[in-house]
Image (cartoon, rainbow, N blue to C red; front, side, top):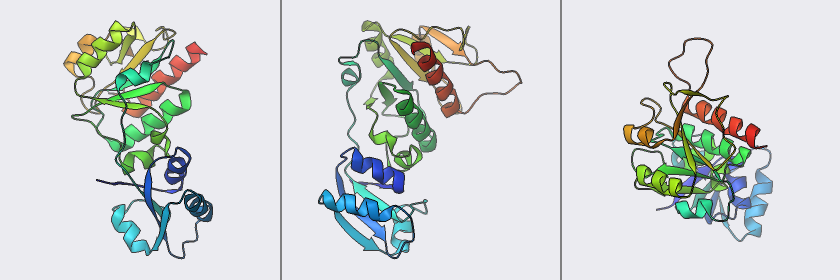
Length: 239
């Protein structure tokens, strides 16, 4: 089944990433800067471009902010976990334990790409998958960062540990502070579900749990914010 991605940035990144685009729909008489550039790039790649009414794009995107352009792509091709660490001396990975909101997933993928994270791992169950909403929320960068989808996160963590990759989970009850933890070696950072945090088994598998310092009493941070703080602290330490 084809997927649809929409918005100028998402389509631009799909074109530059050589994503398999089957067709592009462009709104007739749209007065949106940059559309002509994207249409010409699509034509150069021999992609069929169809001009349609705004109503059709609204229907395809279910009212999303499509900016006058939608691309039909083949289903996202996930990698294997082995692909994420192959040939990387000291990998920095992100594990998302049941992140279900596609906007959160997209935001995390965008940050991970910007910071040079080597790959992201998500579970097949109880998790958002890479779709048009995620690609849009990521600004298209979901199509550029390596992503693996696995059946069993706990077994995946065991595999990573066998590769001498330390596992650090974000948890409000963590004994280590974000700013005193060491992220310089091979590392996988783990964040949990928006409402429930880390699942029990994943929490138990973590080598250490990290708390994000707060000056005022807040139940928890948005998962994409927590992920961003962890990623950029790791980036700061690793240079």
